[in-house]
Length: 245
Ligand SMILES: Nc1ccn([C@@H]2O[C@H](COP(=O)(O)OP(=O)(O)OP(=O)(O)O)[C@@H](O)[C@H]2O)c(=O)n1
Ligand SMILES: C[C@](O)(CO)[C@H](O)COP(=O)(O)O
Image (cartoon, rainbow, N blue to C red; front, side, top):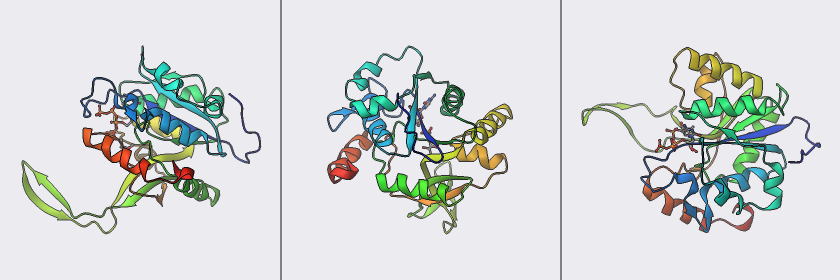
């Protein structure tokens, strides 16, 4: 792994890839399913590693993961050079991220940026990653990608609509989610210790009193979750020009 020493403030990507993909219902975890000729995780890693601001990538895999070899053979040399030694994930996404932060701490400085990006989001656009870095360079203490809610939102109980929710200030939170290493490590550890349900990094930082910025991205930065998402992801990638592929 070679560091790009030209960066003013180093940034690292953290890729939680230790999930079981139960909602996908496939014979193997969804991050290893073939998408446009290579594993989902290979697409995600290539997108992160080709960005010049990303100094290195920390991947977290399930214990006794048997699929990594099938990913590594699809990675080009430039991608492999940026990969840090694999860390072991945890029982939840948040636990996997915490393990990754601890492993990264042996390579990174406390003030370095960490961008946490789901392995299951292989369609991340270069321009959206650029937008996230632009927010950090503009002084944001932390920032995440997302898009405004475009549908009417209902609160439902037992199949009955209780109310229509004002969506004027509602956004869908995506990844990457970017924070200073020491800030995220502290907030995530304290939130988990307090029993807070942490479904994304921003929720831990918000709980700890932070006010991350929301950066408008593209809705095609989908999280591959359900079976139909594989065909959608393939259509998205097929429609990309070379730069964004
Ligand atoms: N214990 C876990 C659970 C999830 N993830 C990762 O977090 C990302 C987003 O989580 P999700 O989409 O929920 O993945 P899964 O947990 O695998 O899916 P499911 O909930 O359907 O089992 C995925 O890249 C997944 O691999 C992880 O690293 N460790
Ligand atoms: C982090 C995330 O992708 C932001 O939308 C989402 O919270 C992950 O949720 P999951 O249930 O762990 O897939």
